[in-house]
Image (cartoon, rainbow, N blue to C red; front, side, top):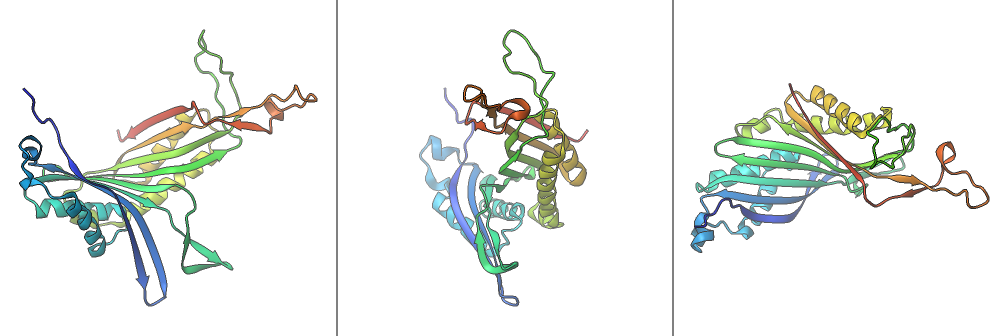
Length: 296
């Protein structure tokens, strides 16, 4: 006998752009997002009996994403995700959970002659601000915030030594190496009972994002890193200290390798160790280091 063990459905890759126009100053601000909304609930018969009477069409879900962006602020994305998810529970009694993911793409204001331009922006990298919300009748609103795709590199100030050496080891120890990674940092908030609770004290979300980004960059740059593991743990500790309502912090950091090139075969050029200047960036394989740090 077969049974439906789990099911969710909805609309993915909904691109949304919203502009805020300050009539008093003539300044405009823009937000561009990619939104995913997947619903769960009493929808089993749509799978098992071809009963579409329980299906909120995914096109209707797409339309709702746009309408809620018109009705509510989209910044911070945590608040927009909470309002969007709560709508589906309030509107449809047979829907029990709304899973929302929001990816915010960077648009940075252009400075002209040292002054911020009122309505012109540029894309300064692939870094995104992400939010995942699980809005549930039983469990309330569970929120995860994230930084993804923040590419960083330091040309010195990183080491790696003292690791296990055995018959499988060829890697040499180093006390000075290039360290580069694409930051994927996620922090999990305490559970909120309602969207109204998310809105109360809403400034917490931008504050935590700015703190997490600043801590990540500052620790990466200043830490005399003995390993990626130790550096990421320090980042987690400091974010937990700064954001009182965050329950846990996690990082996923690929170690993007830059290998020295031995050029001694050409005119005796020294290009290893302290003489290394020219490197070969590697696309793979790469190390991948992850951790999650929670409050005691």
